[in-house]
Image 1 (cartoon, rainbow over the protein chains, first blue to last red):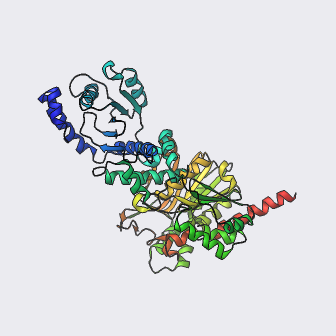
Image 2: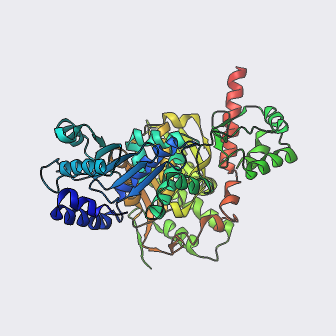
Image 3: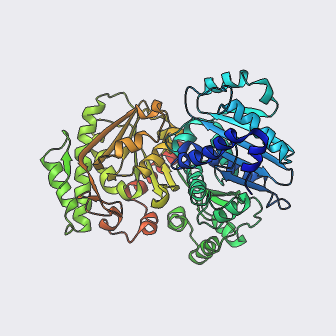
Length: 297
Length: 234
């Protein structure tokens, strides 16, 4: 369904032309837009946590939506709510006034959404300059203040760089990853990024995006509902190896020997690969760490 | 051949780089060339560090431990007694440019190291170095970080630098002998180190090299365990 005619009837033909051009310009800018893609990865990490068994098809995400505030759109169907994001890396970003200004885009988005029957609109300006974001927050125009937020999100060269400079990004990825080690966080974020870049023009269901990720191997996603534990015989063998300890957390097995060797089996404890690993332990019956460590790798 | 040598390179370095590039060099001679290159890189490193009051950590990957890293440690051991080792087993996924760590050997003294030497037989995409260095800077706060390799790609320094905030990247000091420009579609540099280092050292593939435990790790771990037992006995 197109909103173009609705825009014309609400705001006139000049605004309609601007609305159409905004989509064309936006689509070309989208290509290779690292900042937008990294921000989308963070949004997806948040949205994955909101999916519940009852609401699996509730949330949709759109890159370059048909909208005034169009860089990223998240629709919560069940709550009839829409979150619109506009991302800005320019140091001269300002609210402005009149047609084509950010404040006017935000205002028109709210009017358009109200006319389309959207119950709750949230418009977010995402800014890569922390001080600028604070100033924009302070100077938010009155006519958009009720539904507008400003978020600081830093520009980064790579996902590794982003994890090192942005604690919020690191925390959100950590909430869905089986480990808090940066190499695993990076691996999961890169996997989400790859899926997002490949699917963003064809897939809008957040649940389907998560499903495609879950089918990747290895996928580094925490598995919170896994109840599998070690075979009693494997546990007994491990208990005889001096200074060896292990834990199963978020569905994955990690181990430590003294305080200098450590590792993680990169597949979850409910996988067939982990079953094969346990069978190898019971068949080889290692009695000391030297005999065990080749199996742990 | 699009290769340039750095000012650190001498005849021994050039000769051993040629042995690596030569596809007829067998695994034993190949590992010997890596060890000798490590010794030479260690000599250059010692000149660059030029400070006896340091706590040094040498970090490497499993495939580089027994030859390249051992050579560097042997050279540095003449001058520094306080050298700790970190060794990583990475599971590289080239398509995503990631190399998660599946096992790590990290001596307790790594935490207090103030000079970090990260060693790799070749640095091209810098993916593995980035991963292991990121892990290490969560453990210690080095004042100086040396990135050391016999061969690097011409874009490797820029690629590695951009993975880190400036406060970290400005500590990087690169030591290498050769810079190659040509990269094949499989990611191998030409002449590089004569193809894939795992296969040149006799490993079947990545999984095979990740099941390997280097002699360097076994020996150093054994001495740490013995030292701790003696401490308890005393």
